[in-house]
Image 1 (cartoon, rainbow, N blue to C red):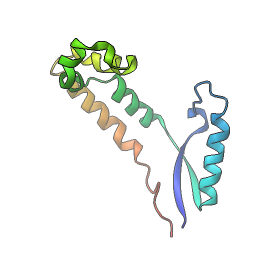
Image 2: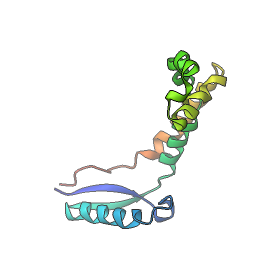
Image 3: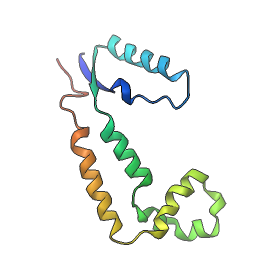
Image 4: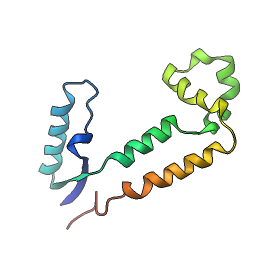
Length: 120
Protein backbone atom coordinates (compact mmCIF):
# COMPACT_ATOMS: atom_id res chain seq x y z
CA UNK A 1 0.00 0.00 0.00
CA UNK A 2 1.30 3.45 -0.87
CA UNK A 3 0.65 6.41 1.37
CA UNK A 4 1.99 9.87 2.19
CA UNK A 5 2.99 11.05 5.63
CA UNK A 6 4.11 14.39 6.97
CA UNK A 7 7.37 15.27 8.65
CA UNK A 8 8.42 18.69 9.95
CA UNK A 9 10.68 20.83 7.84
CA UNK A 10 14.34 20.28 8.84
CA UNK A 11 14.61 23.67 10.57
CA UNK A 12 11.59 22.76 12.72
CA UNK A 13 13.01 19.52 14.10
CA UNK A 14 13.91 19.84 17.77
CA UNK A 15 15.85 17.20 19.65
CA UNK A 16 15.87 18.91 23.07
CA UNK A 17 19.46 17.94 23.74
CA UNK A 18 18.95 14.24 23.12
CA UNK A 19 21.72 13.05 20.81
CA UNK A 20 19.88 9.81 19.98
CA UNK A 21 16.73 11.46 18.59
CA UNK A 22 18.08 12.40 15.12
CA UNK A 23 19.10 8.81 14.34
CA UNK A 24 15.82 7.45 15.75
CA UNK A 25 13.86 9.91 13.63
CA UNK A 26 15.82 8.98 10.51
CA UNK A 27 15.20 5.28 11.22
CA UNK A 28 11.47 5.91 11.62
CA UNK A 29 11.36 7.79 8.32
CA UNK A 30 13.28 4.98 6.61
CA UNK A 31 10.85 2.44 8.08
CA UNK A 32 7.86 4.40 6.75
CA UNK A 33 9.46 4.59 3.31
CA UNK A 34 10.13 0.84 3.38
CA UNK A 35 6.42 0.33 4.06
CA UNK A 36 5.55 2.28 0.90
CA UNK A 37 5.28 5.75 2.38
CA UNK A 38 6.21 8.97 0.65
CA UNK A 39 7.68 11.64 2.93
CA UNK A 40 6.05 15.07 2.62
CA UNK A 41 7.65 17.99 4.43
CA UNK A 42 5.05 20.08 6.22
CA UNK A 43 5.06 23.34 8.10
CA UNK A 44 4.99 22.12 11.71
CA UNK A 45 4.37 25.62 13.12
CA UNK A 46 0.57 25.19 13.46
CA UNK A 47 1.14 22.05 15.54
CA UNK A 48 3.63 23.89 17.77
CA UNK A 49 1.15 26.76 18.12
CA UNK A 50 -1.58 24.27 19.11
CA UNK A 51 0.73 22.66 21.68
CA UNK A 52 1.53 26.06 23.20
CA UNK A 53 -2.14 26.91 23.30
CA UNK A 54 -2.97 23.57 24.90
CA UNK A 55 -0.35 23.83 27.63
CA UNK A 56 -0.11 27.58 28.07
CA UNK A 57 -3.60 28.63 26.98
CA UNK A 58 -6.55 30.09 28.83
CA UNK A 59 -8.35 26.93 29.90
CA UNK A 60 -9.87 27.60 33.31
CA UNK A 61 -12.05 24.46 33.23
CA UNK A 62 -8.99 22.39 34.08
CA UNK A 63 -8.64 24.25 37.32
CA UNK A 64 -12.37 24.30 37.99
CA UNK A 65 -12.57 20.52 37.60
CA UNK A 66 -10.11 19.87 40.44
CA UNK A 67 -10.02 23.16 42.35
CA UNK A 68 -10.88 21.66 45.73
CA UNK A 69 -8.38 18.84 45.32
CA UNK A 70 -5.52 21.06 44.12
CA UNK A 71 -6.12 23.51 46.97
CA UNK A 72 -6.07 20.74 49.58
CA UNK A 73 -3.32 18.56 48.05
CA UNK A 74 -1.13 20.67 45.75
CA UNK A 75 1.85 18.33 46.14
CA UNK A 76 -0.22 15.36 44.90
CA UNK A 77 0.17 16.61 41.33
CA UNK A 78 3.33 16.47 39.27
CA UNK A 79 4.87 19.96 39.39
CA UNK A 80 4.49 20.49 35.62
CA UNK A 81 0.86 19.37 35.67
CA UNK A 82 0.15 21.59 38.67
CA UNK A 83 1.81 24.57 36.95
CA UNK A 84 -0.35 24.10 33.83
CA UNK A 85 -3.60 23.65 35.76
CA UNK A 86 -2.99 26.46 38.27
CA UNK A 87 -2.89 29.00 35.44
CA UNK A 88 -6.68 28.66 35.36
CA UNK A 89 -6.93 30.08 38.86
CA UNK A 90 -6.58 33.67 37.63
CA UNK A 91 -8.49 33.56 34.34
CA UNK A 92 -11.69 35.46 33.68
CA UNK A 93 -14.74 33.96 31.99
CA UNK A 94 -13.88 35.88 28.83
CA UNK A 95 -10.34 34.56 28.46
CA UNK A 96 -11.19 31.15 26.91
CA UNK A 97 -12.83 32.86 23.94
CA UNK A 98 -9.39 34.15 22.96
CA UNK A 99 -8.17 30.58 23.18
CA UNK A 100 -10.90 29.41 20.82
CA UNK A 101 -9.73 31.98 18.30
CA UNK A 102 -6.25 30.54 18.69
CA UNK A 103 -7.50 27.01 17.96
CA UNK A 104 -9.14 28.22 14.78
CA UNK A 105 -5.86 29.84 13.77
CA UNK A 106 -4.02 26.54 14.28
CA UNK A 107 -6.53 24.19 12.68
CA UNK A 108 -6.66 25.21 9.02
CA UNK A 109 -2.94 25.10 8.17
CA UNK A 110 -2.55 21.87 10.16
CA UNK A 111 -4.57 19.95 7.58
CA UNK A 112 -2.26 19.54 4.56
CA UNK A 113 -4.24 17.79 1.82
CA UNK A 114 -3.58 14.12 1.23
CA UNK A 115 -1.40 13.34 4.22
CA UNK A 116 -1.87 9.88 5.65
CA UNK A 117 -4.10 9.09 2.73
CA UNK A 118 -3.80 6.07 0.52
CA UNK A 119 -2.38 6.71 -2.94
CA UNK A 120 -3.53 3.45 -4.50
